[in-house]
Amino acid sequence: MVVVTDIHKSFGQVYAVRGVSFELAPGQIAGLLGHNGAGKTTTIRMIAGYLTPDVGRVSVAGFDTVTNRQAALAKLGYLPEANPLYPEMGVPEYLHFRARLFGVERAKRHEAVERAIERCWLKEMRGRRIATLSKGYKQRVGLAAALLHEPPVLLLDEPTNGLDPTQIHETRGLIKELAADRTVLVSSHILPEIERVCDRVIIFAGGKVGADGSPTDLARGIGVHAGRGNIGSVYTMEARSHEQSDARAASFENALRANSGVSSFDPAAALPDGWTRWTIHATAAARDMREELAAAAAKHSLVVRELRSERASLEKVFMTVLERAGDLP
Amino acid sequence: MSTGTGVLAGTSAVARRELSSYFRQPAGWIVIALMMFLMGVVFALVVLVPGRPASMRAFFEASGWLLLPVAPAISMRLLAEELRSGTIEHLCTSPISTPALILGKYAGAVLFLVAMLAPTVVLPFILWVLSDPHPDFGPVLAGYLCLVLLGSLYIAVGLLASASTTNATLAFLVTLFAILGLLLVGGVAQVSWLPAWARDACEGLSTRWRVADFAKGVIDTTHAIYFLTLSALLLTLSGSVLHLRRSL
Image 1 (tube, helix red, strand yellow):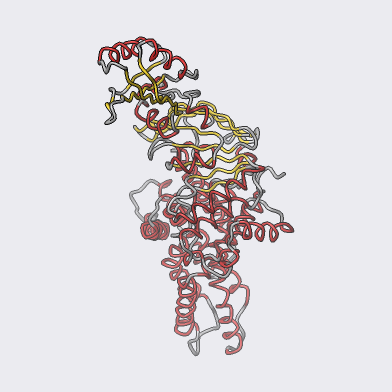
Image 2: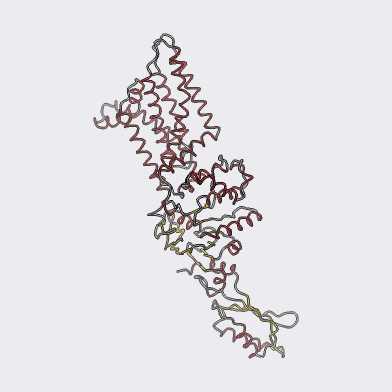
């Protein structure tokens, strides 16, 4: 539905986007994640046709946004980051204007506006001028305006920015609902937001794609392009040797060092009840290491009372990608 | 499904919003009221003079001067405000073409100018009732046509200025100076040491003597062509400036 092919954009000496490519399938709900200045907004603006890429191309529903601009833009609903509106206009009046701008036929315009008002909970705000609305309601007006022409692709740049928790919750629900029959690209710098809404996460770092995949895949290191070696399951093991000897523990640690599946481990922590806890970070390789670890412990005469594995959280993936953005090709 | 909004539909969408936005703000009504007041004063002082032949000529000449500050005030916010507030992003990401956007903005402002001049048509009727012999309506028509053409040219200058800055005040000042330049460039044509072609060019660019012709009641098509081509050129330039801003 949306195909982004190796786009670049610089503003003077500043390189905002450096070679970004991805493809969104119909019905997909994808999240662009990255800190401020990572190139999210510039990328979205290039897809929306507001900025022209220096290099590369973008196509929406098969139409190139540069050579077939109007046809491509007719397929897009776009909520810009700052959500600029005309403060002096009334809510229905503004929506009618936007519907005309998007070529919604006269006969269907009224219905389209009413549907958008209903969907975005704007009924009570009909009689109000936009200037007098709270930030949350303004955001809904922006979202309603993006839906008027029933676009198959929605681009939402930081849709929950500046909203209170209730509004964030409602907006999230609305985005999910809208995604049922649309392709949606949402950007945010708030991780849980993306994690809860999206079935695909694209992490931006330094104007490039640092990771791209489903949250589950990313947690396994699949689709991660930067700092991949640092992402993997974390194993926590509590064990002790019968003779309370440090030598056993030391030889076990040597075995860990020699294991190719282990990326690092935290120094053994002595617990108050005489047991020792190891926290072992595995490499991104997806295999389960519990059996291996238990066998290694037994080999070095350690008794294990607990061994559990935890997948890397999306947060860990996110932080690792950001830290290692410099490694990106 | 549609493959974009047609030029006409896009232009009319933008023009309607623009025109109604003047009336949604007090500034629009104040400008109309002030203009009516001043044109009424001019009418009373220079037209309704007992013993003079019934002619609106002086009124139209004076009204041409009144457009000098008023037209830039109409045009200054056209694009500068959209650029400042960011609403331009909606216009530039909707499936309308840049010409439709520029034409819509221009049409909205010109329609406001017409709405502003419309109430003053009572003045020639007052003159008609009061005077004997009655005045000719030919020159009155030519006079109004001239005011609209002149105002439209000023607004086209203003649109270009407004596309070039996010600061409406700056757009106002630049427009004011530019149209003053258009008025005064005729004076350069009198400078004797200039080569003949330069003097001809200055003469050709000047609006002043064309306005004088209209006020006499002469509708010369070359004058109309002058106003229309110059306006069209300025609109094209505004479109290019807007396009350039986006691709920077």
